[in-house]
Length: 334
Image (tube, rainbow, N blue to C red; front, top):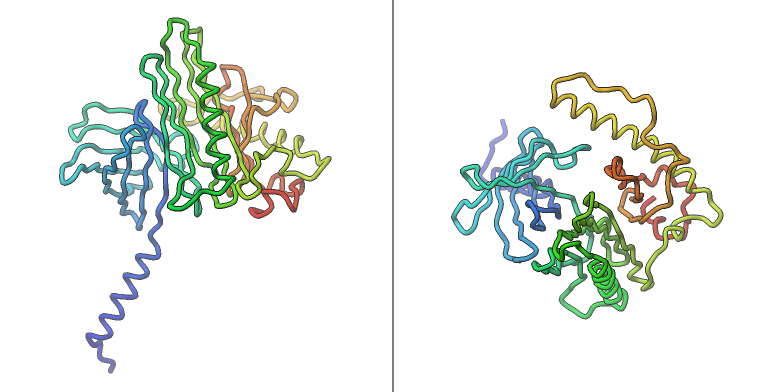
């Protein structure tokens, strides 16, 4: 008969705690609460969630605690010991259509829509900076590489470049009555010590017939200190455009079906069947931008207003693997 001693108990508890600690995962998100840009850090340990977030315009952290309810996030916001708000998502954050998240005061008042996008940062420190002009309606958040020591030449050049691009976009904002809405937020698609790829999401309402949502991006080789072009990823003379077009057309159709099924579920009806594709390979315009993630590339199109929802498209590396340059920037992710 084996005797379970105090020493055995200590070892058991220690091993259990280590296992629990190692299973915890921390993720960084960017997004918005209403029209306010935020950055959030969450640690997931099973269904338990803790973390913090801050408004870009304020910079002061608010603590968070909560849990996952069937994969959907529920959080309580704390300022000191006081409960000041709550987040509630109807679906998981990685839902293909919409996680349907909201923020409100604890009593449910002042409810606002919330967006959250996971940031893929490994070893790089990136800090949000803002340009705000309430007189004209400008609200821009942009990334800056920061650190405790001197920045590399590549990091400094990236910082200057993204500021210059943001200021250029602001300079092109010309609202009809002198004031409109120009809102730009960013996502770090990929951030390593050697490479950074940033997606800028822009909303423009200058008082015309339709507001405009668009994307622009910047992918920078920090080690080589140069801005990358899309063709830098691929073998010379490779027909990667055909592979991308074929995948994008099929993926847009799949996503459109998912959106229609989701709408039908909400409206308690049968999904409408589509006879024609949303876009054909021949209808695809030239790329308006591109970015890199650890799992694939993101490409942007400037589609007409009625299908602008599909401007942003993700292509896994597996789809374009045979076309990638083995010495190019995407080679390390294959």
